[in-house]
Image 1 (cartoon, rainbow, N blue to C red):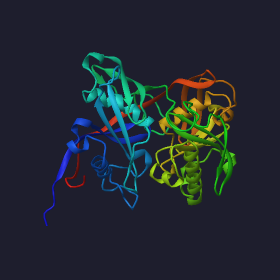
Image 2: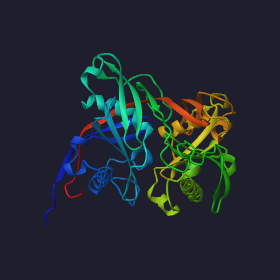
Image 3: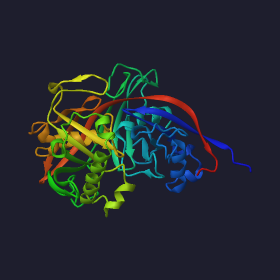
Length: 397
């Protein structure tokens, strides 16, 4: 029985922040995959190696974690004052779906560099040496990201001495600005970044109880809960959570009830097909702990501790979009994040995560009684790992 040969598609495998993903130019995809729909989803699933009942993604480019099961599609932007349109697809590992409901803040750090190298930024805007300001339209959530990409002799600079906890080797620093990061289009808040219009809510969770939570749409929809309210202290590493099936089920139950309360889903069973958003995170006041690398993090090094789950598992560091949510919530007095950091106004916060620490800034103010955040700022790094073509069976999409 004859079988169709594999086809090859131009692609680049990149690290951005503490994530890795396969990057494509929209124009390089097969024609039927240049539009959103089943064909595109099927192609990306096959590229990454999903769905894989073994959970390993051996037959694809994925790395069997939420941080490494990612795809990016970029196109030259026709939107005024923007260079590139950025579409992010979070690929499920063991199920046949691609979640398009949110952004990846970590891979955002690689978008500018890829856009420059792929010819998606006008040459006149690229300095010979210095920093190129790449104006990114994040198509999943309809927001603008500004990436400041270093260049040397007309080429993207990838090597450097900027260290990012969760990434083994240093690289060049890429500063990101997430403009107007609050997502005001979903939920019942009528334009508020807090869907309930409250900084703290009582969330009734079946089988768990009533929890104090802060639910925020900034960077990515996120539900924050106090660590001690669910039996943790905020210093936990991945094995303490990911090896505990009962704990993972509890977090997913909280996440589903929060998603329903935020207006992101209409029924609890919809949460299973919307794994990328919202995120669930727990916070605690500062205390000393050993990070996953063995590095000692002193209580005096951080303002608070945060652990977050992505795609049903505790993240090894921190999602970039969740970092935006953390920085935003920390800037607003009265949220659980702000209170864990000691309360009061602030325009930056350094938090401890499983791999170390991260600093994120946010500019917040009250306008007409509503909190508004004009931007969130953080630094990441990025580099190309491999470039060429990715191959998939011709009948897989």
